[in-house]
Amino acid sequence: MSDFFNEASWEKAWKEDPDTYINRSKQAGIDPSRDFDHKAKAFHEQSFSPEGRKRTNRILNWIEGQGVSFKNASVLDIGAASGVFSVPFAERGARVTAVESSPPQVELLKENIAKFDEGQMKIIPVPFEEIDVQANGLSQAFDLVFVSMCPVIRDWESVEKVLQCARKFCYISLPVSSAEHSLVNEIWPLVTGKPYKSKPAEMGYLLHLLYLKGYAYESLVTRETKTVEMSKEEALQEMMSWLRRHGLPVDERNQTIVADYLDQAYPSGQVSFQQGGRFGKVLIRLQDQNMYTREI
Image 1 (spheres, rainbow, N blue to C red):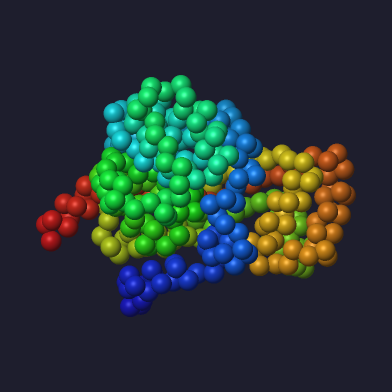
Image 2: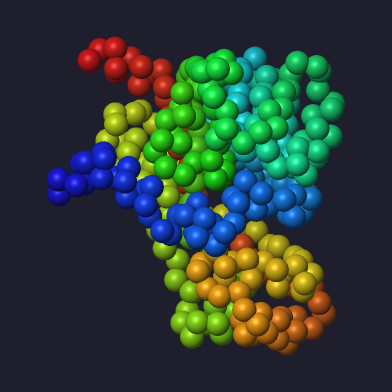
């Protein structure tokens, strides 16, 4: 029971958990900051599709429902991609600083923000991990710091760095459990002989440490899915990347198993599958935290 209330134990467990996205990527030799470069255009199109816009608006409406106003607010969007949230923030009247290091995402982001007045949008095209918050004048510089499903959140130290940039609010979203992927459910048993089983994910560490450290916050867990379509060649690449990240060999045997299955199951050459999972959202109230600290 004592470990349940021990901050250091939870911080250590998060950092060393082999099943986190970051640690699985490291073990597989994958750079998380560049992992989506080849998907930049497809991700952009999905994000700005009618369905993608609806999802974005649901999240922004939830944040506004907690008392956050975007009008004239300063927002730091970490892991901005092509502007899936940066653009709506600006459309709602915020001044946005977007941190994004993926070159193809940065190019798409530049195109998407061209319509805004100069000074309303700023891009920092470097990894957040490399930014010195104090030296770059980012300490408590933003009304809202926003980090949605971004690998910059990898342990409690990274959370503290993000919180350092916020004056009032900080929004973080993370997976609650490992991703749901209908194509993985089909292929995993062929490779391993066992059904694919979802595991708890990083959100549990974040929420428990916020609780232990006395932060005030609202949280929400939702289950979201979307239909993804890609060519058979892209699906093969997707599945091999998935196997590599989960510690399975990307060898001729497994590549043949996956390729043969795709040939048989999707003779048209187009692969359609469901992708999603349970995702956690948390809005941290820094003003309440600061008041609590001063009273102590």
